[in-house]
Image 1 (spheres, helix red, strand yellow):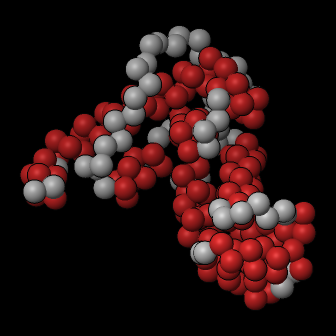
Image 2 (cartoon, rainbow, N blue to C red; image 1 turned 60 degrees about the vertical axis):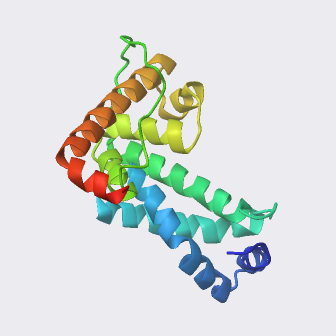
Image 3 (cartoon, rainbow, N blue to C red; image 1 turned 45 degrees about the vertical axis):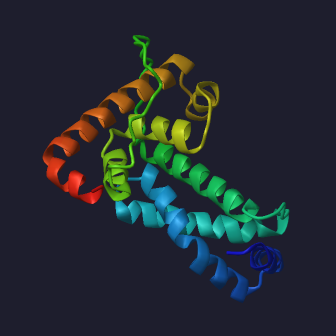
Length: 190
């Protein structure tokens, strides 16, 4: 969506204009659903989170202040993340213990371009709930361990430990995928 259209949609949402709501939905529902799906592995539950998020977005649109291109999607994405986290807490999906046995991690995620995005997405969704939640918050929401700990009600070292374990599982899945698809990957990049 270009900046002018985004500004018009944002102003229409502020006024409660149903055509602006429709255009917002058509433009952003895919992005917002993918955010839901990163946190909520069950598609029906992810749809419920998206629906609740849209209700909040439309009801809070009067308070939104347009700050330039991308600000509308960033604001809506934040609402979706908060709603997904709230849903996870409510359903007790997130089970994160206080694990203090943090091992060193090089901090590098081998999310190379040779892995199709849909496969990476599948791998992330298959992570255990606590690992997936911390991984998403750290990698996609760019939150610090301190912020994650505060949001989830855990210790900072538990957040770091969960991230370490998530990365290790993802590396294992990526390695497995590469071994199973070695010939296909070579063809794709030749």
